[in-house]
Image (tube, rainbow, N blue to C red; front, top):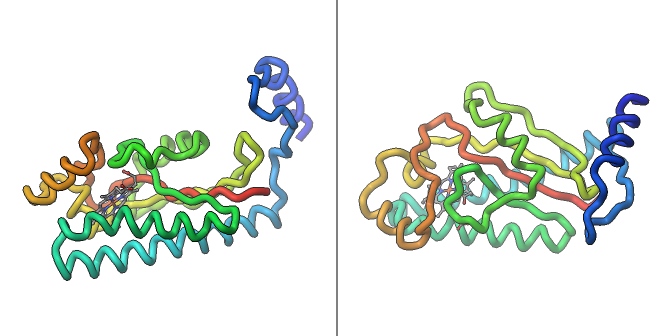
Length: 192
Ligand code: HEC
């Protein structure tokens, strides 16, 4: 504890805060109760997005095939993002290989994702809760590639899927994934 305080004091001296960045010292540790509470809240929020997305994607694919389902991935996620924003909660999906550049996550998600890249669905990484640099609470969990996902994120895409994706996402990097691979993460940010 004392060591951590010393380290953050030294780091604080070495890294002067930039203009515009709040310089208040945020409590960087969470109590066990807080950690458990935010883990539960994060899981709950994440679950609503995942459940809706997967069921709508499955339904849309069986109704009209993957080309018709492409819009679901975008619209459903946006709908849920807006719904939780009303409660002061931000949510998103991100990856180191993005389809939509607008899905860039907050900086704190990057290092977590880096550490999870080589993990797989059969040995999943546990969700994490942390205090972010600007004093918010971050929740992050891995998103693994399921057989359903390879329709649009896999190696051999149907030509019509491929051309539709190229049209909508000219900078698409989110293909080449195999079932079981880490596809990205789901993150949630709460005000403390
Ligand atoms: C029908 C095609 C389709 C399927 C199936 C699909 N996705 Fe996507 N995925 C997309 C599209 C389109 C986007 C970009 C959405 C946007 O514009 O925000 C996307 C974006 C994402 C992102 C956000 C990061 C990025 O690259 O922009 C993640 C993470 C993701 N998908 C994971 C998954 C997972 C996991 C599955 C399986 C459960 C899945 N997707 C199934 C089409 C699909």
